[in-house]
Image (cartoon, rainbow, N blue to C red; front, top):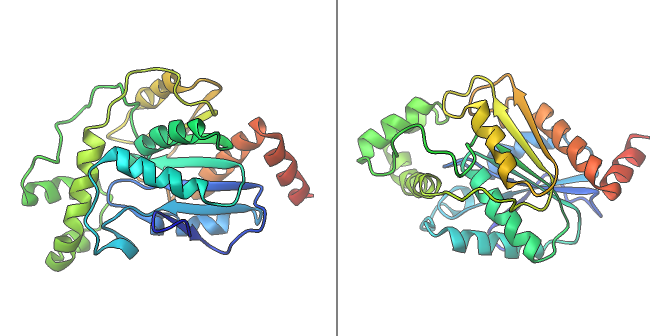
Length: 259
């Protein structure tokens, strides 16, 4: 669907009331969001970004040019059948969600919600030195210490040789991403923070309010940094609630479904 850049997760939904477009953390792909299907109402469609260098595109060289990524994701999203759209971006994905939201708004796409999770607002100074300049051994050790990649994978030399370029490219993009505070997002913004996140403080997530031209809502979860799977039910509930609050077609469609 929509070329290689977006993957539909689960069965196609005819005339979806809402479409969720998910953008994963560094090194992640659509598989991160497959468990979300069981948490979604039948009328909500789920798609996820698939960047070069992972999953079905593992043989492709990773992309380090943010403008190209945003352009391709915008084209892929606009090629889908019309439906209200909600974005979810986790960590690196939150940075992509910001620029993608701006791009989609310029194209007059029906954007109902932008959810940013587990990433400091892009004008907040980083709390740690960048990992991308490290040599391979030190880089993998630092990534492993973050807890998002299984130790078995990090110790598998052949797997890491295949996976390392994409992981490095993602950290390069993430650590180089910054934006001056300005109300850039026309849709409502939902920020999700893990109360036990050792990398992103709740105040860093609150700072996303500077980028919201409309409503802003901050919610905290009893979680660390990687909560997209462990707290999927809560995330989905909050997103659908917030998208329905702002969009009458979404609200009325989900109400009819619940009835």
